Image (cartoon, rainbow, N blue to C red):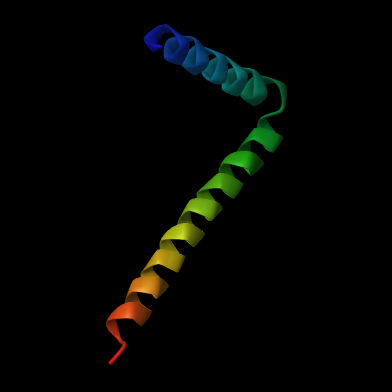
Length: 56
């Protein structure tokens, strides 16, 4: 199973490098979208716990 993980890692890394070199604008858009998704997730968690703690 460890070998499969290594192969998958190198395939994903190779695809990322290929994507950046062939279309850097699109790759930057994808990274920005992923970053915004992560930030939205943290914001939702913050609002959830704030609402949970403010209940009486």
